[in-house]
Length: 119
Image (cartoon, rainbow, N blue to C red):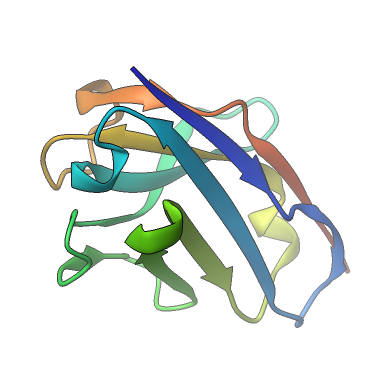
């Protein structure tokens, strides 16, 4: 079992940056691929970024998002630059075993942290 807890969300003005984090605990959490997804009101889950267990490979379709991890502290980060109102969503971290954008292949999920961007 892996437990994931997100933090760092809040209300932010458009154009600013925000760094949210996800702390993992449980069995060998540092060996898992970590991903970030988001869900806006009335929308499907959307892949945001993922990072390999070692941190050497990342996938982030939107260059405003930067994913990183600190395995010594079992924490993965998501920095969002130049925030837009369309980034308003609940952001979830998830752990899995392979680099993938498919949410179905992530085994463990956090409860999410709300990010709200004002214009």
